Image 1 (tube, helix red, strand yellow):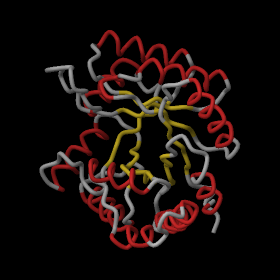
Image 2: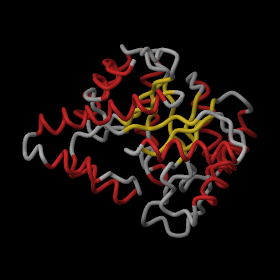
Image 3: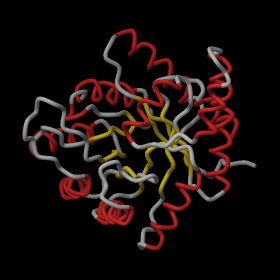
Image 4: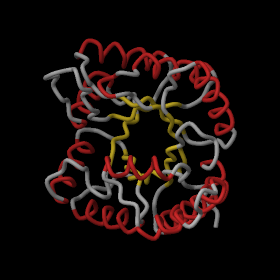
Length: 276
């Protein structure tokens, strides 16, 4: 089945070293050959990677690549945020991923600016120049009081002017489809793109998933554990699992896929080529 009518995008994080940057340049060149709708680049807690993120965005725009910076207020004030928005606009950036973001330790009582407030701020300053994407949580944000409350706050972000949403990664397709049903009942009709995390280092994935509330089904744990110390087998098994998940999502009506690449070409490229 061809999925050429769907939207595919790739995400990475700004590297902290020259070697990491050289690797990322190759990664985006290889993935750009697949002609994705856009790339996105993350933004550290409190804007801690602001300069690195901006540097990546600037370099990719100079190469004519469509790249969406992640953005959150963090410890910045409105003047710093408007300056950053204007700088991105001048570079030809036309899409932003607007997030609440985290306040890093050591920043004390810095005010949290919620994503709906950030979306409203961007719209007030930049009008409709930017396509705005926000985050969605099919398995519920770890800080949320209830499923219904999470849907309520998610709707606020879209009502504030966001065009679409990208989800936290997950491995249970039913979580996504139930979330879409709940959103539809709440009057939400904007596209919600599933975020997909390839499985490479399972130990790291399990640790990160426990922190962010992404459930890894037991059957996946068992399949990966059966691979033992064979890293190639882990990657191949993980690839099969995520290809199957992606196909189920697309067949069920998902409007596309957003890949969390972890700055790796593979296995995102292999998964993409298997499903398009």
